[in-house]
Length: 68
Image (tube, rainbow, N blue to C red; front, side):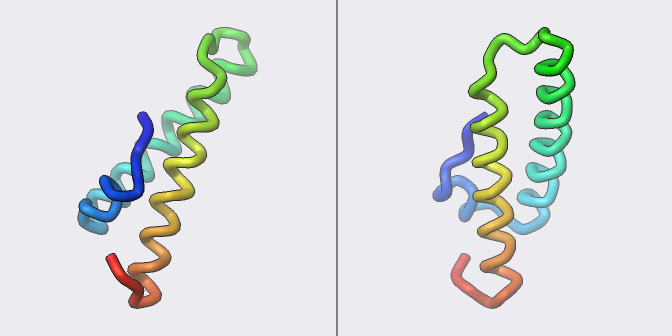
């Protein structure tokens, strides 16, 4: 699931925490599938990592009193 910055900024902090946990679990599952050679779409791991980074960036901005 690809999350755009605008979509992320529209969500509440609690929703972002839930989404972050879900993405981390999905990334872990994808890594296990990759190592067992069952993962067909390798680029999905890259997109998950980017979405996690975007969420963490927004959460950090909010924690530091930035916009969002």
